[in-house]
Structure formats: C-alpha cells, structure tokens
Amino acid sequence: MPHKDEALSGIALFAGLSESEIRALAQRAVERRFAADEMLFWEGEPCTGIFLLTEGSAKIFKTSAAGREMMLSLETAPSSVAELPLFDGGPYPASVRAVGPVVALFINKSDFHQVCRQFPDVALKLLAVVGGRLRHLVGVVESMTFGSVTQRLARILLDISRQAAADEFDLALTHQELASRLGTVREVVSRNLARFRAEGVVQIQGHQLRILDRASLEREAEAQG
Image (cartoon, helix red, strand yellow):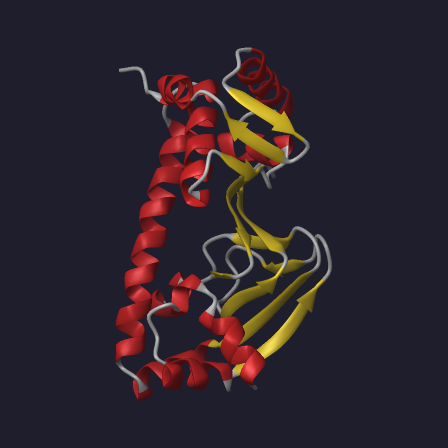
C-alpha cells in the first residue's frame, strides 16, 4: 500500500517517523470518505481512533448549551484530527465536520497503541507534534477571548499569514466561519474587513487576501491593557 505510506508521510503529525514506523501505521489505516457537511464525529463521543485527512478540509468546533457553534480550527489535508484522545483515553473533546468532500485514513485506537508498543519512539515523536498543536490552541483561545473583535480579527489574519509564510494567502474561512471563531456575527467581520480594505491595510480578491500594510495590521492586533 505505497499510496498510504506516501499519504501518511505528508502529514505533519508523522513528519519525524521512520519508513518502518510509517509502514506499520499504513498497514493498519482504513480509507473513509465523507460527504460535504457530514460529521466525522461529535464532541463527547468515545474516541475510536485517529482521522488523517488526505483530501479536503474539516472544521473543528465546540457547541454551547444554547446550540451556538464556535470554530476552533479549519484543518486542510494533509492533516490530522483527534490526536489527544489517543493518549489520554478520554472522549473526543470537540466535533469535526467535513467542509466539502473529505477522504481520510482512519487508524483504530487499539491498532495505534499496538504500533506504539512495537515502536516506542512513535509516541514520543507524536507527542512533540501534539505539544505544538496545544500551543496553537492556546493562541486560539487568546484570539477568541482578549481584545476587541477588530484586534482579534487582525491577529487571525497575521496568524494565517505566518502559517502560509507569505503576505498573500488563500483565506479559506468564510466570513461566517471567522465570526464563529471570534465569537461574533458575520456582519461585524464583514464590516471590519471592509474597513481594513478601505484603509489600504489589506487587498481582497475572491478568497485571496494580501496584506499590504503589515505594520498597520500589527498595530490593530495589539491588545489594549
């Protein structure tokens, strides 16, 4: 199954693994396909295994008691979701929904643990990557909690730019998804983006966003004491 080996090698979670470690995981991976808006799993469900996105994008979100969704992340292939429950034994901490058609490789939790026992370094290598994901989530919490919507929106745009390592990038999030991530409504996000554009801070064409004045955007992102 060379295609599975190749797919797993392209996922950041497995970047530090050897060929034999990748092969052991690939032998246990099963392909699953999801239609647009189909759930991969719901928050609170027992963890059955890890999902590795090879095609498409998936939205990770939490739902309040009132039914309001707050997006934590938009993962685009090649990527992984549901790493933490593999290690702590708890349920899925958030829900994941396919944004469009998604192809994923699924590794059962018991099979994953078997590979970790066979190759003890696998768990250590993966935990290093998971630690980085946790640091990112701390930043997400900060972006949703501290400062005005304008400041938090500026931080998200700067964060996406850093991840893309470029001033111009594809803004995969819709205005509604940005609003969900910021804990606000779509109109507020649209109004702030329109102001950034009118002031020459950013340029927006379709899904492409280009930062024209990074210094101004960074000033917008600075939290007020």
